[in-house]
Image (cartoon, one colour):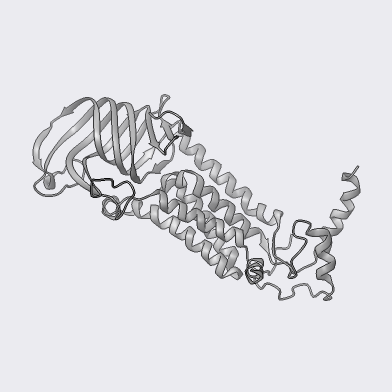
Amino acid sequence: MASSSDATPSAGSTPEPSGTPESVSGPDGPDRPEGPARRGRVRARRAAVMAVPATLVAAGLMILTAQGALGVQFAISGMPFTVTATNLDGQGFEQFGALDRMAEGSPNEGDTGGQVLVVVSAIRNATLTKLCQSVDLGGTNLLITAGQGEQKVTATNLTTDSTELSGDAAFDNIEIGNDASTLDKAGVQGPKGVFSQQADTVRIAHLRQTNYATTAAVFKLPGLKLRFSDQGC
Amino acid sequence: MSAFRNWRAARPFWGGLLLALGGAEILFTEQASLKVVMHIGMQGLAGYLLPAVMLICGLLVLFNPAQRLFYSVCGVLASLGTWLTSNLGGFLVGLLLGVVGSCLAFGWLPDQEPRRGLLGRRRARAPVRTP
């Protein structure tokens, strides 16, 4: 393999009589028969030197993620998406209203003026069973499921901006009616003069959310499956 | 048009282009507002940083092909890192584009040597394969 000084192209690392271009392009370049100047090419074995370890590392990352050994960070928004879970357990819970702005001139604006009223829920440590997340891409859904088996999905500093949230909830030590700027249970503060509530722990069964943004969150996703599907969650 | 062909022939065009596209794709998949990124801190920033590095490496491969080995190594590392930081590498698409692009850039050589050795080997093997 020619792994030596190739940083200077056409410097003539192998001084060769000038008659070679035409004679070489015949046998070795059947895919590009024309072309007056000789072209650089990708050497398969050279590329493999990087491709093989890169593939191994990528496969390793995916396996570790699927087994839940590695956290993955999500930060998506812009389109509404649905999150469901059969059970959510959280320590440190906050909730307050807020106004999300879309990007200027966003096609999703409609007649809203680009603003969406959302409920921000923040949970410091969350454990979810049978997590399912789907985004409607128009015709098909991008579906992510995790935590179907024994191991559960865990997330830290989970913040969701939802327009709808349903489920059977139970709270410990709940404080309702705080000013959103004084919250301290999950480390996120809202704007001044906005209604809010917070609790030490939260348990929600049959959780279903329509979200505009999920942020933060180092997610650990055991049993991760990512696929396209006709049906959402 | 032929000027563009010549320009393309003198650099790992597809490698750099795929790497840059991969970075751009990942940047498009994450649209968290800057305010939210500030809340998260370093981890949120990394989600933007790594695809930006991919994008820059891809462009540098195109415009400074002499240093393509260094850029492609940086690019492949950043691409792999986005799996952890940026929506599973832009839902896998950007990660694949980045890794493939980096490998193409890494394996690219300017067409300068006649490669007698390889030709000889190919010729020696050819009669065995053809029947």
